[in-house]
Length: 170
Image (cartoon, rainbow, N blue to C red; front, side, top):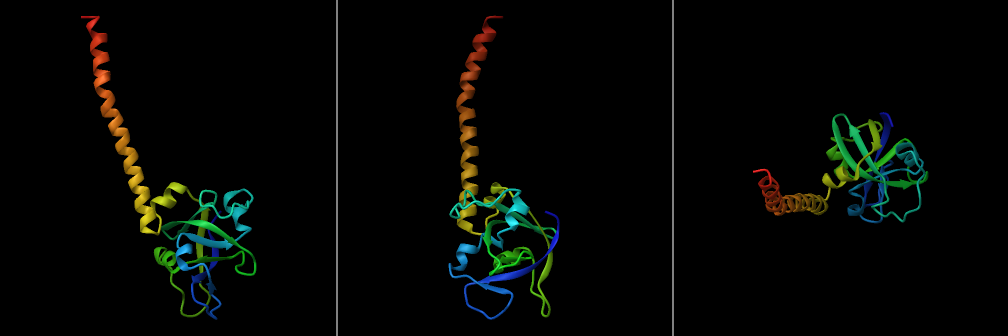
């Protein structure tokens, strides 16, 4: 998906009469790692139909959001036309700060953004919640140390096999 103009709507836990805010009942913590888009945007970004998967994180698509040179990764959260239009996106204040976006004093908050399919590895590696990000990085470190340990455990056997093989020629 190429760069396109989007109107930003702020996801907020309090009811407001502002037209650029969307009230969310689930709590703001649930939405810190999500981007709210119109449901039809899923097919444009991921080139496949949106399936009903009960919002399982392993089944949701990851959206790579680029504004200028800043990139963040968020989980797709679709909504219908009553909440959000095709040229709008809902972001939390944290996501807006990471992208260095600010609401203009007057006028519409319209920005040129690029939305693409993102990788789950980058999503968890750069997750907005510290506990998820640390768990991902510690898991990666554990796998790396396990590979090194297996390599160190196998080296004596390889040396012994090489000695036996070379002893035949000497």
